[in-house]
Amino acid sequence: MTTGHRITVERGTEHVRVVRDGQVLAESRCPLLLRETGLPVRYYLPPEDVRTDLLTPSDTHTYCPFKGTASYWSLPEAPDLVWYYPDPNTEVAEIKDHLCFYEVETVTG
Image: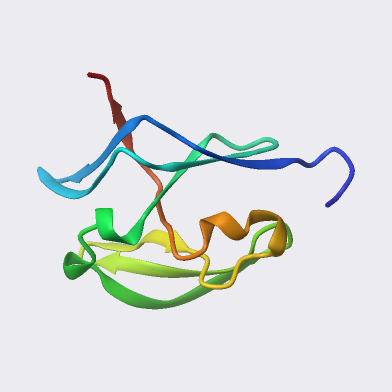
């Protein structure tokens, strides 16, 4: 990794819910928290906690030198809303196939 750039992945206990236009897209009590220099904490959710039946695979792919190549899922009105790494770099192998949304809420209690 580049000097000064750091990524850590840890198991979280937060209750994470993703809601869009009143519909719950994901809900998890076992997110992975990815902390990356200069970016907000990202919650990577296990696929079984995401309503993939509501999502459509996208043709979009992006590359991160620290994590690898990301693939995306979309809603009809929200292209590329969710991303995941089907084959992440070794340093972040734990996030493999976990899905990450741009906006999530954490629920207490």
